[in-house]
Length: 275
Ligand SMILES: *[C@@H]1O[C@H](CO)[C@@H](O)[C@H](O)[C@H]1NC(C)=O
Ligand SMILES: *[C@@H]1O[C@H](CO)[C@@H](O)[C@H](O)[C@H]1NC(C)=O
Image (cartoon, rainbow, N blue to C red; front, side):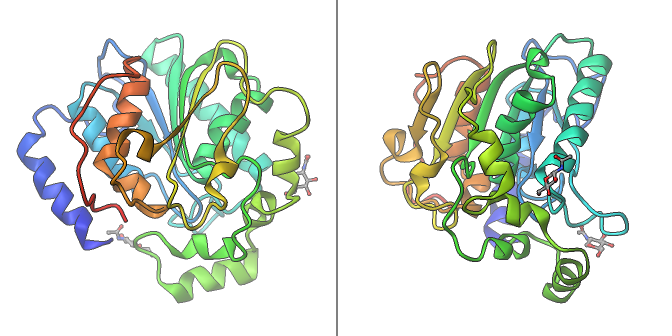
């Protein structure tokens, strides 16, 4: 875990009054329940976890699972083929709707999770259970990043040997899926709309994303979809791909999506720790 997150965490500790814990189905909020979808090689407790705690301090009830992990390797999510992870996510969305008694959830995804936030409503029959979608740096039209496999190495508590062993023995179908001409990319871009009726989609991307490249690959050019650069709001934010999950400016942009306050001003942090 990068040390800046420890810093961010101690800063948070001072402000956290009512964190409910994740996956607390008795949590009450006037906002929709928020389901967070992590990136490739990550888990529910890495990647978006700090954003998740912060959202709780802002009044949101938050839910997350590790999806797409192989049996016996629960600490390395998102490796399975997109079309195998997607039903896991859809099942979880149904569970959250049912257990919270709300009619819809909002989705927040990062990287592969951002891709799933678009893919699952389109293909898994749950669009009617989803309201707002904040999709951070999805490889919507594929990433040219040659070593997408490397994404699996980027998160927290995974030793390179352990990751290498899993990739060698079980593989990373999701890596194949999200590269140029990957099957999941082609399916998402099958010519029918990505954004589903009733879903309000916002794509958030950094001009300085070094992994999902070119960064504009994330954007969905359809009516009703909001595409925004982090730098449209915070021009001095140098945040790169991994840092997007830990960047307070991004957190505020996500909150504005979830709270339906798209133009609400916040103080941009300069030199955000998220690079
Ligand atoms: C799921 O996607 C993989 C590619 O990642 C493909 O080989 C497989 O045929 C797909 N399965 C189904 C049921 O569509
Ligand atoms: C790190 O991963 C190992 C499994 O490889 C697990 O036993 C341990 O609890 C994890 N530590 C943290 C802090 O998540």
